Image (tube, rainbow, N blue to C red; front, side, top):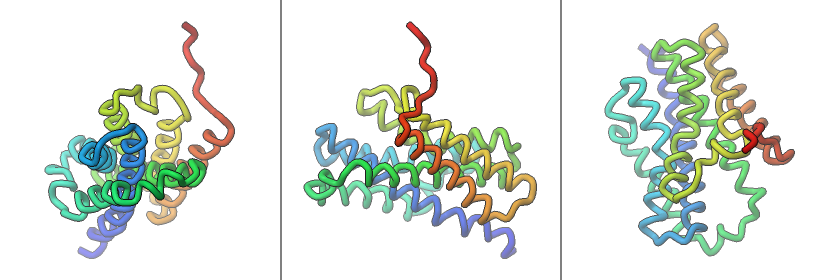
Length: 209
């Protein structure tokens, strides 16, 4: 019994950490767009839990964790509340310091999504795709609600970083790699690719119009 519980016990804190980081990132984006307090909290919540809801629904793990575990909505709302209550301070934090937080949240959600998919019997390919969807899902919802083109469709190899990290974790777990090591490796790959893309200005080729 303990062996069966161990994966969930490991994934839950990682999932909650990603939820909190994405809540902060979503709240900051909403505040910068000029939304009121309610709008900031809504965007923060959607950014934080959107990817996890998509993941759980596709895996048939319903109702999604956010509706079963009070820690998820509390973490998401708390992240938005931090932005509302301290925006005068955090809005002046240099962008270079905030980007690693976004990359970390992306990496956490990507590897947790991939690991959970492997646990549900998915192939490495499908698990990697689901992990990437988990990582970018909340951001897509955020951008759509804010009236913009989702980030994954226009710049920064955002989804590619999530897919690469999720693939490392999915393949490693599928073929018996140590769970903690595979999660850490996938997370590192995602974060490094994301930050290098930002630093070097990498973008996928655009279709000429």
